[in-house]
Amino acid sequence: MALSHVVRRGRIAASALVLTAAAAWPAATPASAATPAAAVTPAAADEVTCVLRPGIVHKDMLGNTFTGDLYCSNAPGDLYGRPAFDAPVTGRLKTTESWFVCYSIGEAHKGGNNIWYYTQGDEAVELPGLKAWGNMPASSVLTSTDPFPGLPRCPWH
Image 1 (tube, helix red, strand yellow):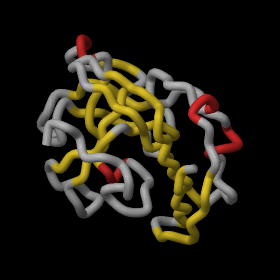
Image 2: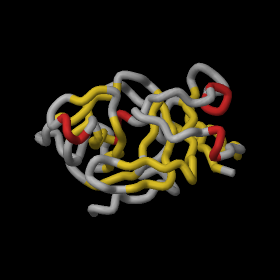
Image 3: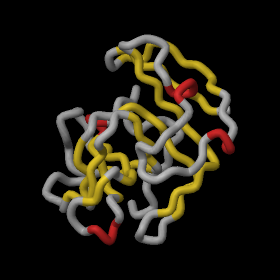
């Protein structure tokens, strides 16, 4: 069972329990790969749902293994090699629903905090050996709060 937070235009509107089986959420690459629509479709057009999915395994190109993720709506955009805008753009998310495996503390961004989420993009940009893994500012991930409750901090911080 995973706790999801329903957000309406940036504010928590309600909390709900979302039942998910690990088998129903296959580990997918890239972050925007298909996920069962019924489990992540918002109840209304102005709501966004983020769901923690324990037990899903992702491995990045640096040798890190993650055993869960946050599936959430996001703005398409660039991923950075470290949580800072002057870092190389390692990947790009092209879609608006993606998974994120952990968060880091980095450079402040327009979201008013310094939280960044780590994921694998849809396309590699710079440093192709990283296979599009990188950090996205929290202002581009539509969470109810940052860092999202229950998502682990990245192991390198």
